Image (tube, rainbow, N blue to C red; front, side):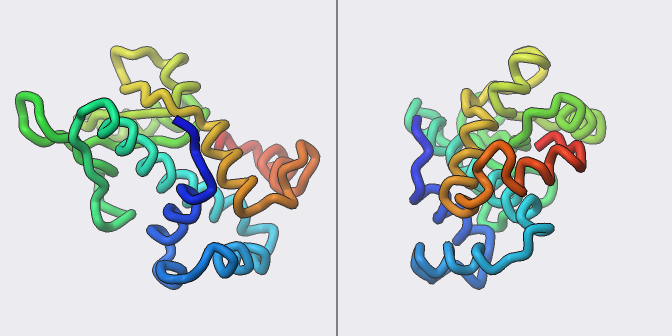
Length: 169
């Protein structure tokens, strides 16, 4: 599954009420005006929503019924998966390449199933998490290339900002 620009714009529209009905050009213009210090927060917010969308689509393409919650800030979990013994299973998704970030969330909520990016799943193990088969790097690249193109360079402001703060996302 390839993440396309339209998926990123759909994630923005889902996560920003003020941008729900605007064009791709207006969305791009909006993100061109934000200050550099807030780029990381916006990027991670959009990446998380994009991850939810992509995973639900992947499940549906494989014949498994799944759905997003209407609100992007649904308490506790991120998506619903239909079928199986319990009928509906709610799952929390973590769009990150940081094992410590994910394991801390798992410790805080041990009763919830976690679906994670392929980078984290390969390090944690399939018996503890669900490997979505979606790479964190692919999510980041899609968001950066679509909305923050001027900071894609490995020495760009976005990368330097992450490096300086030591952020795992």
